[in-house]
Amino acid sequence: MPVIRLEADTPERTQIGEGLVKFAVQAGRLETGRAEGRYFLRHDDGCAVDGRRIAPGDPFAFDTDSGEIRCLDHADEGAAGARSERG
Image (cartoon, rainbow, N blue to C red; front, side, top):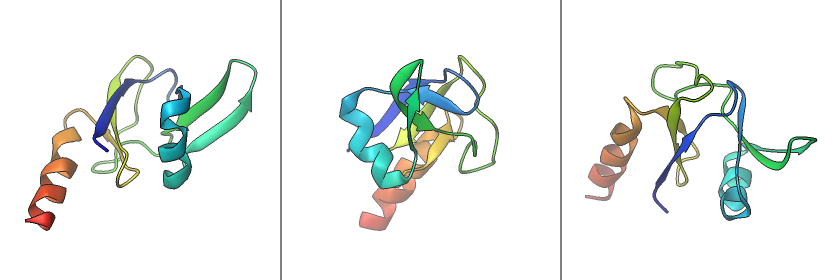
């Protein structure tokens, strides 16, 4: 599965649809049980590369293979690394 680009709802989580739930569960990032929605992707740990927090309205990337969250500055780094490992 590819890297999915989303826009943050809050610094902690972003609402997602059912199509991403499986990947959020695998990554240990699924949050449920909120009044404002059914499924959320947690990204409170920030960018996997430099720890930069994801601000509301900021675009970010969710790598469905690794489960990592990355800011857009680092979104392509993980994909490039994965390609070179597969070689």
